[in-house]
Length: 437
Image (cartoon, rainbow, N blue to C red):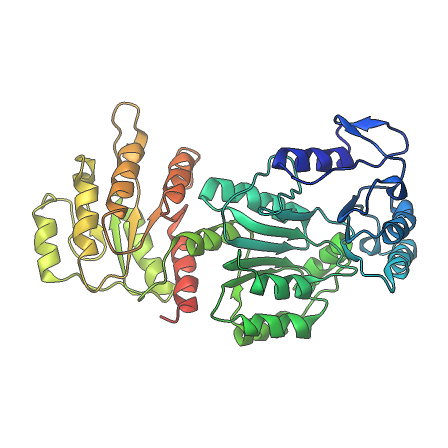
């Protein structure tokens, strides 16, 4: 069976949830090998958490059963509420609020995937596993949180907690932010928001954690048409773009533009130490990408310092004189084809006092045996060098599926890797701003 409720149950089982699991469905005696119960009230004990995946009209009465049974919390996976823009959907939400009025039970959703917790071994979709990550996610879109989890698996990023909050009928993003700001398992918070329902409390929580944990926010629905899309997605009321920009500045929120941007900046914060300055040295074999990288360094508000004379002399002893450049960028030309040269250049540049971050353009206009673009050789040299230098390093690959395995390999080694100079430099600039340099 692949209905939503069964998939959610399978996700919990595969995650290794350690508590008892009680399927509830009056039409079945057993689901996935577990005894099935006809109702919440028929369970042998009060559940700590109930996950509802039932038709919209059945949600209010089942929520009342949860309250009567003494459940601690309820995740309403079901859609079909205020996001429809109909009186019927709004009325159903009122019924749910009436059902929990005066009780201690809290509701996540409706129209959401629910909660992933690495420590608690809660999962929102099949394939999730516990990890030792320190990144938390609040998302009013279930798909965004799921995609981000998958992207994290490619980038060496695992999560402490993920909350797919949906329509936020009861608990909202301010509640989640207040909790995560104090959560010892969380060192960075990402949020995808279509509406901030309790704006003052959210802003206060963001200001209190300013400088303590990075808060990255992708605020959607700021245009007229985007706002309409948000209303039909989670029932959100669009915000004003200028007001939101002011909120970002006041609270030190780092803006995120889209899913790829979210993956880039989360990867950078996850792997990089605190930056000590904005001085970047670009090392590249492809000359055109080196020029593009240099342009983007300066356009992003980063610096491209000249290398010390002693550094240039040491580079000249490694690289050929023809077709190379020893300034900044360091153009390795065909010197990058010689095994070991890239690692040597990285080590030399890392000893230059003017450089805070090394930016390496991976690959070369050559191939050897089964190593297209020498990506395999360069990846190994970068990973080895990274363990021996005291400067953070980032890598720029090419936007191709051929490069993707090496991007992932580098990220899992703790080296943030990007698919373009634009992505790398915009991300580095935001990280530098957060660290006050």
